[in-house]
Amino acid sequence: MKKVLALKAHLLIISLISISLSVHAQKSDTIKRTVVVEVDTVVTGAKPTVNTTTGEVIHQKEIQPPVFYRGLLIIEGGVVYNDNVMPVLLAGEFGLARNFGLEARAWYGSNTNDGNKYENGFLGVGLNYHFSGEDSDKPSKFDPYVGGLYGKILDASGTAFYAQAGGRLFIFKSLGVFANLNLGIVGKRGTNLSFGLSYKIH
Image (cartoon, rainbow, N blue to C red; front, side, top):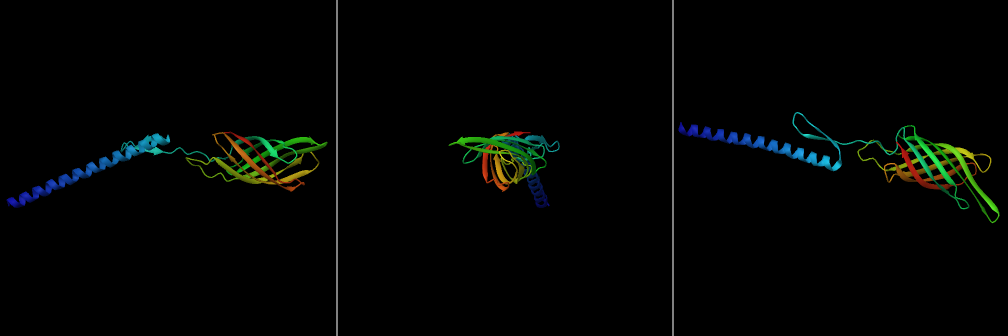
């Protein structure tokens, strides 16, 4: 009888020890997860919230729009590369939707060389498709696009249509650089390359 009671007592002690270890392990795991989340919050600068039931700090990442989006206005200034004259360029693009932008672009320049006057001018509007991606906590700084440009030739009669492709790289939040390639389809205008600075108006 004494042996049976002793055995039961041992089993009871072992059960209590197991329960105690299990509770301690759960508390340790909660503390570790809370500390990890708090450290991650400090590093990323996210805004934390606290779970009122468990007391854990919950990390919420700050989601930002892509590099190009609806309602965004981009202003650009630069030059157009040409053998005889380098026209000054001004352009602006407005985000109609996440991937589509309406653009206005103009350039003009003139130069006299050996008695010959060279002019290059254009004023037109275009539509671009942007490969801008989705909302993310780390959106891309590169804004590639393709599109078309139609308008009037300023230094001669007639109109011109260009197929175009380009990209912008925003080194800072609102300021970046751009390069744009225009391929003349209609209007006897050849290929030209323009480059310069881009500025976002959010």
